[in-house]
Length: 129
Image (cartoon, rainbow, N blue to C red; front, side, top):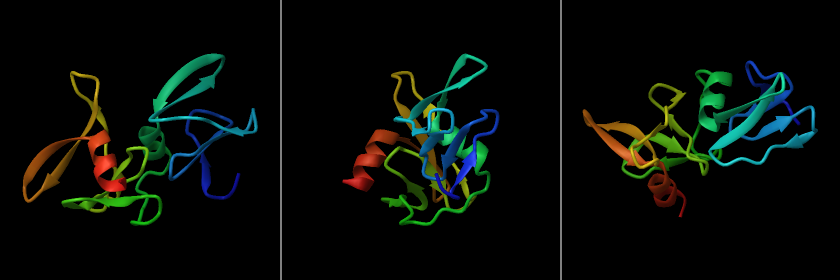
């Protein structure tokens, strides 16, 4: 583990990087995860989204394109990583991911005064493929 990790608030022994990599000091391992990760506290299991943990740990972080994030096509003020974390270059914060009625993750993006619902999986494939 290096200096790019910070302890996750409320979860002693767990550390996270700005890119969403999570390290457990107890097991001395990096945790496997997709969009969600399972953490334990007082023998209780907690499932958290990676993007929420990053936001809570690195509030007001500044991410630049190329730091595991790429600009989202047609939305120049937003960046996305391969895990679906979306960062606003305008507010300098990670955007909140929502779940639609079909169980799909989506995000609200603004452009020219209009708001657009965009599926995270589609944004990842359009940006990273």
